[in-house]
Structures are given as C-alpha cells and as structure tokens.
Image (cartoon, rainbow, N blue to C red; front, side, top):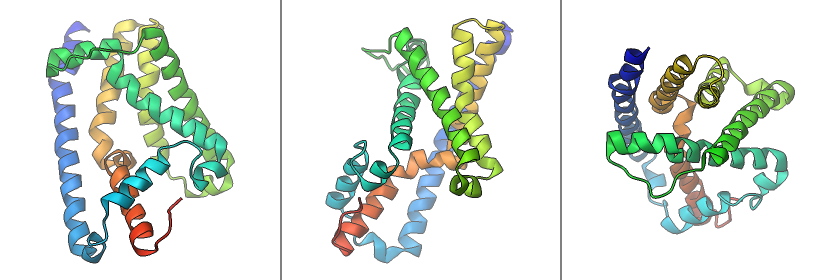
Length: 220
C-alpha cells in the first residue's frame, strides 16, 4: 500500500495536474476563439466597468434578486463554494504537499478542527443539492445522469478525506482513495459541468456588459 500511495501522490498526481492544466488552457482558448469568431459583435461591448460591477454584485449574498428569491439555496450555495475552495487549498496537510511539490509556502492554514467542520458542510451541502434534485420538480426535470456523477465526483474527496483523517476504516486505503478521487475531480474540471469554475467570471462579465452597455439596466 505504501508503494501505491507513492504512485498516486507522484506520477498519478502529476498526470492529473497535467490533464487539468492542459485541458483548462485548451477550453479557454477554444472558447475565446469561438467567441470572437461566432459572436464578434458582442466582443465590442465587453466592458470592464459593467463586467466587474456584475461580478461584484453577484458575489454578495442576498444582494441580487436571484439570491433574494431563494434564500436557503443562496445560503447553502455560498457556504458550499467557500468551503469547496478553501479546504483543498489551505488544509494544513495539503499545505505540506503544496510546498513539497510546487515550492509554494503558505503563511496561514486552516486549523484542523475548522477544516473538519467545513468538510462536513460541503458533504451536507451536497446532500441538500441531491435532495433538491429529487424533490423539486423543476430541478428534477432538467437533471441528467451526468449531474449525479458530477455531484458524486465533488463530494467523494471530502468524504474520503474525512474518513481518512478520523481513521475510520483502513487509513491507508482511505487516504489513497482520497488522493485518487481528488485527482479525478481536478482532471475532469475542464471536461465536465465543473468547467463553470473556469468560465463563471467571464460569463458573468459578459452578461453584465450586455445589460449595462446595451440595455442600460442592471443585471440583478
């Protein structure tokens, strides 16, 4: 099992990062080229002012009409995304790997007990999203099989990480599974619905620019 661990945190990890980086570059370049060739007129009204204004408005919980109309979904969504970003990056155990493999040293990391709570919040949020997909007719209608796979892909590293940290079941097996699921999540970001992580800011800036520069109204 020790050899397997060395493999997944070594060659397999570099492969996962390579797929993510190259895939992200490809998707971004492809989207940019398609944007300027298929929708060239829209490129002319892209505005830093209106784009950043829109991004800022939608980053504030309960500020926009959309956020206000669904307060529970809004609260869960914000908690989910904050924890989803902070835990993988600033977890103390991960900080060691950042320094070991990338030479990046953090001056601050999440306390383990805080990261533990945030992990449980991510898991709870995923359960909420799953129940919502089953119970809410409009969401259930547009839900496809790939949506369930993405949800499972997102929550798996947090479940396995939690089990490994608390040494529930076999620790070595769970930590290997944690690394594998984390790398699968990373590698599939450019090729799944998780790609909104790459395009969310651009999409929001595009909408904000259209509403502000063309329609002369706010997009919230």
